[in-house]
Length: 418
Image (cartoon, rainbow, N blue to C red):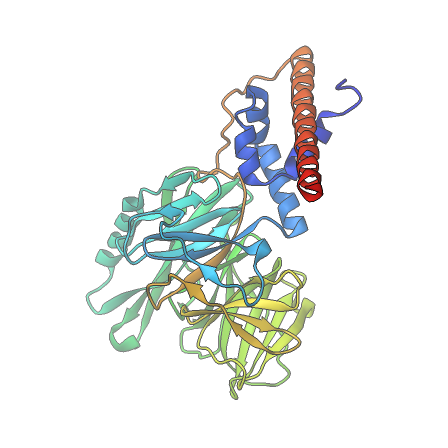
């Protein structure tokens, strides 16, 4: 039987299922659990979700936890209702988002505690952030008394070179009254190795605000200035190579840009460029690192929407609107063609500050390591038997599903005739 239906076809069938169903199917048999937990299947499922632009969840940071909203079913005008009991409770105060990548979301608090969690499977990894804090305190103690130490950026992303997830934080050393610049440092934490280290940033680079780095194309991005210059630059840090690079900006056509916000729209790196008249143009980079690939996708008129900072979250199902987080206070849908703004009403909101992020639903473990315990390769006979067992399970579940559908149809027709 298995010779007629290859095992990769069975994998493809499972890869189109949602996470909740897959988690239930892990209990069917050891073979199913081994398949679903394998890194190959996890990557296949995640790649298909990204390709089809499905399985996304909007996470809203509420009182002490994260509230998930099914983004695939969200439309402009929908009322968002926060759960009384957050889906994931972390029991912290003053929590902030550090980033999201491949289904994992990273959070921290003012005490320096950090957690990486998979909001779909509810697995999490608490970071030994005392190591990071110790490194930071060493940097502070080594700084002369006449210098100030400022946190000026943080982020979370995936290192494809070492198959690892990393958390980073940036500190800059300035003279009293910003009269001089000493240096900037980045602390890097590896979830896979459970280690952290510090690197010197090789430029007189001032990261202009303490913001979340934008992760795209294996790099985290911030806005920075060279010391003594007021020109905003886009700086990327490659998590695989531990290297900084400047990313070219769009050609703004001679307009004077007074502020820049970074983000991701679809799978593309994007820039919100605000001009002197407080209008803004939004650009996407179709080929990462190539200046000529910047393309303007829409504009924002100053009399329609005003903001100090903006974070794009994603497109609507129709692709005509984009969901924006403004000033960490409000969510709005913006019509790219109509230029119409629709505020998102959030029921159950208890505080003014609001943070939201789009997170992929995936099976990726928060420590970046495979969950598969059995590393022995099965024999051909064992593999054949496993394939037949999984196939029989699939056939059984498929037949069962058809029987339930037929039963529902019969019940409907019976009720209709009565």
